[in-house]
Length: 171
Image 1 (spheres, rainbow, N blue to C red):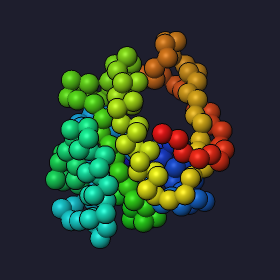
Image 2: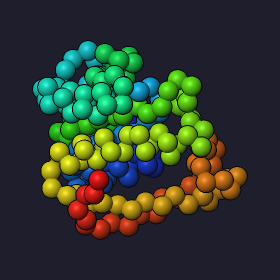
Image 3: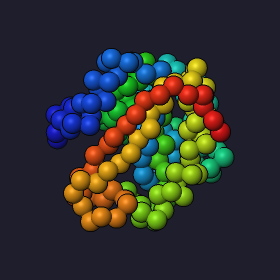
Image 4: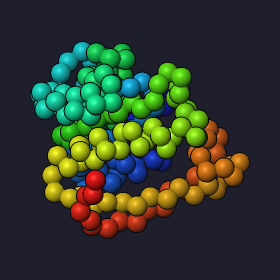
């Protein structure tokens, strides 16, 4: 097993959270059709389980998904960002698992827009509930080494460019 924060992107998230602790943390994953909540490391419930479970239900049910802790849905999941952000920053944390078993862990590029369009309105509702309009980040993915198509794929290198601004959330 790799040591905690061994990847540059996980260190970047850790450092950002140390500077600007989040009220909510959403980590989008593929696949499964679930909205996961803490805790994943053991068969225990968070002290905020009722709130987390209610919000997860509101994301999951309109999509026909299941919801709950990892151990209730997919099995124990130790060392996840879901648990770390909840334990370290007391953030309300959610891990929507988009897609189907047919999509697998690496959905076809042509399916990504459809999968995101399905879940984004539900995720925006989570953000709205978390409090006043947050600082939004516009993100652009720029391929630095790969096959030239518009989708990130295993083995390719991509750069994330972002711009922050304050804005009201829109539906």
